[in-house]
View 1 (cartoon, rainbow, N blue to C red):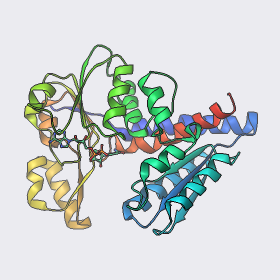
View 2: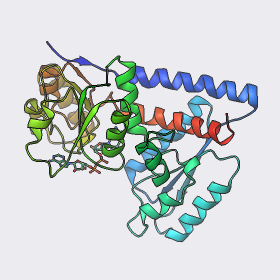
View 3: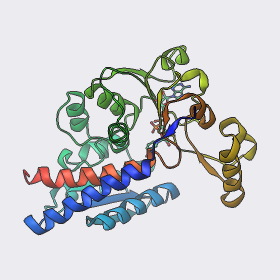
Length: 309
Ligand code: NAD
């Protein structure tokens, strides 16, 4: 039987509607309007799109947003000054420094300078520490979105074997911490893991965050498993598509490459997941849509926490 597809859109829309309601309530009952500042340095094309999407989602939900776009040659000290100014600004609840930063800027130094209470990306070591101790914290948005997909789709996590493939600070590690907090038994797999498929094929839940198109194949997946695909890879070579897709989906993707020059492919082989998994999040249309919704969640949570609400 074909895997059931979990729609990221439906879940993201539900979360955004809840947040919009909360923002309205905060404004009318307490005269508070949550505010987010996104700082972008340089002209990375993908970053420009991501920040534009974040700003427009703020507008959609009634959150104040500001986009500070700085030139590539901005120095580390200048950026630190801006972060410090935003830390002090009483009306700013969330600060987001879009990654990657230009090579001459030390990312860790910038992220460490953000006030942990305004750190809506959840990357500050204080928030990472709080998460690892299972305490209230601002949690990285993509793994937080995965937990929402699982919970709101009725997937049981407690007691299940979960395999997270990838150990980045942005996805893999916080994902593992969150699954542990939900009482899963978690294995973190990475580029040095031996016999990956022998581990993942025993997992009830697989989260793939690797950055290689179609990497997770039938061998890695237990029959009926829950497969969450975090990967976002742009594929422009039409001859590769039959590795990942079949039937109507293959036709759709070939047309996408013809029209737009590329199509987005996850880290999981779509056709293998459809044939073997029990439930599966597609790319696009899965986890990616939750990331911005969870950023909005963090901004409103930060606004409330700063005022002890
Ligand atoms: P990363 O490059 O920082 O980390 C990749 C991880 O994959 C590493 O920890 C590495 O150990 C592991 N890996 C590499 N080769 C492997 C192998 N052969 N076997 C097992 N593990 C291997 O990437 P990231 O930032 O964590 O992102 C991962 C993917 O998720 C990318 O495709 C990225 O585009 C996507 N992503 C999506 C969102 C979203 O909003 N949906 C957000 C962030 C990242």
